Every structure is written in C-alpha cells, then in structure tokens.
Figure 1 (spheres, rainbow, N blue to C red):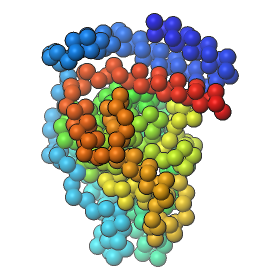
Figure 2 (cartoon, helix red, strand yellow; figure 1 turned 90 degrees about the vertical axis):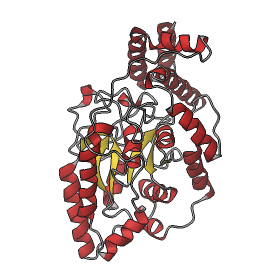
Figure 3 (cartoon, rainbow, N blue to C red; figure 1 turned 90 degrees about the horizontal axis):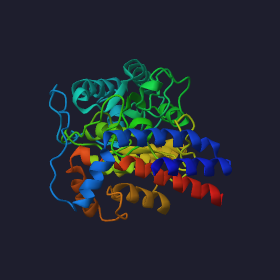
Figure 4 (cartoon, rainbow, N blue to C red; figure 1 turned 60 degrees about the vertical axis):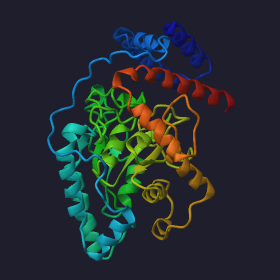
Length: 382
C-alpha cells in the first residue's frame, strides 16, 4: 500500500514539474522499507489496537558509561546580554568562555551525543580574534565572543556537513552558510556541529548514523528532533545557544522536550543558503536558546537586522512576539493542536517524554509524508 502511494506521488510530482521532490520521495521510500523490515509499523498498529494496554517495551540499548556528571538541568549560565557586559568589563574573555564550552563538551558529549563535530581549532581562533577586537575597541555587538553551536545540516567552512549520515561524512563545506557567516560576522564563536535525525527526516533524533542524541535529564530518553542535538547542547549548558532548522517542528519539538526556547521564524526572514534542503518551500532556520531574550538577539542577527537593533534591543514587533510565543508554547504531541498555555505544553511534553523510545520511531515517516503533501499543496497554489 505504501509503495503504491509513493509511485502515485512520484508520478504526480513529475506531472507538476516538481522534479526536485523526487529524490526526497526516494529517500522516504527507502526509510519506509527499513521501517517495514524492522516491523515498527506492525508494533505500532498492535499498540493502537490494544487501546493502550500495557505492553512490554522493546529492549533499548543502555546509554554509554558515565564520563562525568551530566546536569539534570542546564547550569546557571547568565544570559547572552549579561555575559556580553562581562566581556566588555574584562571580567571574562571570549577564550575562557570557549574553553569552558569545549571542556563541557569533552565531559558530557560521550553520554549525551549532542555533537557530531567539535570545531576546536576554529573556535579557539575566533575566540582569540574576538578578544583582540575588544582590546582594540572593535565591538561587533552582543554576540561578540559568545560560544554557540549549529546543527550539522548547516555549512561551516572547512568542516563536513554530514546531515547525520555516513554518506556525507566527507562532504566538506567550502563556505559558511549565509546564517553562519552573519553570526560569525557578529562575533559569535562556533564550537561545534550538533547531532540530528538523519537528513532531518524525523522528530526524535534517534535515527542518526552517529547514534541517538540523548536527553540531558535522562540519557535513556529522546531529545525530540530533528534538531535534537542542538536542544540537548543548550539544555546541558554546552554553549549559550544553537542554530537548528525547522521544516515540520524540527526546532520546536526538541526545544519543548528539552525545556529551552525554540523559534521558527517567518518564511524568508532567515536565508537558507548553505543549508541542506529538505523542502525549499517549508525549510526555516531558527535559534534554540535558554531564554526568549537570547533567542531574540540571535534572530535579529540571523535575519540581517541592523546591529544597532541588536545592541539597543527595541521592543519586538507583534509578529515577532507571536512567533516567540509559538516557539515556547508549541505542542509536541503531533496530533494535538497548538496551545498558548505553557503549563499545558509542559504536561504534554512530559507525557511524550515518558514513553519508551521504541514506541515512537514509527511516527517519523508519517510526519514527513504530511510535510511533502503540504509542500505539494503550496506548489499548486503558487
């Protein structure tokens, strides 16, 4: 039945002149075959048929051995604005902030698996340059010297963009993605590239060629996805923020599950050049941060706002406020409507998070099939 649907969808895409969708369809088809062979769909159907009757969960590989205390919650890092003030007063340096982030990654990443690549040399060089700029009176704004990470779907010059797949492990980016270039120009320091659901095709971050991203509060549970490594890194305090992508809640789901702020900007606000495409009409790039204020600072730079706006911090527009509220209050229960009550969202998040990992894998394919259908609907209206 599923193969028949893919054949129909492929023919429809070709008839409408949407040839760029065909490779994504083929990838989904392969994923569907893998799911069928693993019998995940059959297990899910059995669970639904039993209407919630207790079933023994499938065996889950235990997390790696403890290599350092994993924080139950993010350490009490100050916000970006407060840290920026400390940098300018000389209380801390960009190099010390970066070394703290790299040390945290070295201690916690073996267990959390939040990072695929750690950009140690780049981070130290950029941090040293940021300190030198401040000593000579060059101030690039509130992100100057702040360590952050980016999802490994986004190009950083000189490093592979793996998309969590072994087939891309040698695809080294020749240039920064536009959003990375803007962040580095504003003084942000990239400390690494974070784990994700392979090719961003799923909401769990468990299906990665480099192993699943693990939740900082409980390494036996998922982070959500597909920007799960970014959310785990921010929640564990491994940098002040991270940059993810969102085609079908891929920033908002992991943000909700890991207890951080995730923002999906309006379409077109943040350029996607240099970001591996999933759906050109639905792809977005957005920040994950520990507060709305931090997310706003990142968004302003990513969207190319004047640096004076990032420094002075004018009140956000009604549209920006609505998007930030949506980022915090997005429901992670895929069949539930969005809610504006963050407490209700937290309850749904806790319920989703409490389920064993094995019961959720089968939903990935259905989610992305819906995304493609939406994509085709938009193309028909264009």
